[in-house]
Length: 129
Ligand SMILES: C[S@@+](CC[C@H](N)C(=O)[O-])C[C@H]1O[C@@H](n2cnc3c(N)ncnc32)[C@H](O)[C@@H]1O
Image (cartoon, rainbow, N blue to C red; front, side, top):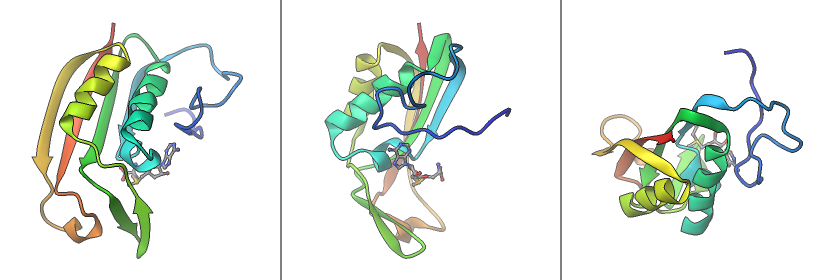
């Protein structure tokens, strides 16, 4: 890691305009951020398209999200989440002109399951061709 940069998926360029770096990235990971930062399925799909602009051809995107989640708690504070399903994830990959590499869904278990109304999550890896 060389630097920490702010990222906002509500911006057309999530790292801010003008682009600080011309170079695009080999890998972008969004860990339980996209469903948390979006208010609708359309916004969620757009978020995929936006982070795809950060990846160079041949590079990868890894996204993990809770599925069918409407809220989660952090320190007792409630945050909203857009409820998405695997169909939305697959549509987002296509709409971002990415090639699906691997996608799995699983069930939350163990500690912390009471901090969200989601029961499932997904891990999806896609490639920019
Ligand atoms: C459930 S937390 C996930 C935290 C951490 N990435 C993890 O995997 O444990 C949701 C995250 O979404 C981020 N987030 C919310 N709105 C966002 C936005 N508009 N753009 C980018 N990230 C956003 C928040 O900063 C928060 O860290």
